[in-house]
Amino acid sequence: MTIYVVFVISLTKGTLKGIFKGPPDTPYAGGKFVVDIQIPDDYPYKPPKMKFDTKVYHPNISSQTGAICLDILKDNWTPVLTLKTALISLQSLLFDPVPGRFVLDSNG
Image (cartoon, rainbow, N blue to C red):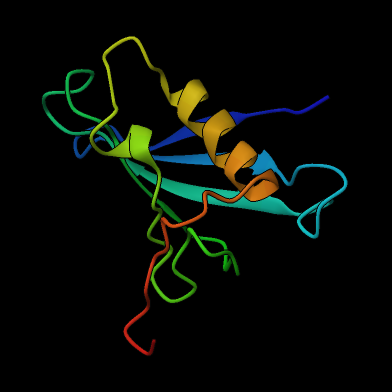
């Protein structure tokens, strides 16, 4: 069973942290992944800004900044989506990378 945890860091700035376990049967299995979540003033009409605090080596995640290349966190966000949906999508991204949507670090 996967547990998703979201906790408040600062109510005034809309800063949250999300935590989830790495998906089974992947190199990330057994890992705990912490995600920084910034809630914009116009949420849920605009997506939350998310980045990994945990160092992750993955083609859709910057190993330097934790930036995430995921469509629902950009152009495909809708107000129907939730923080839980976003965290589940991040866990799924670790299981199944999106080809052709790479995050390029400044070194490469």
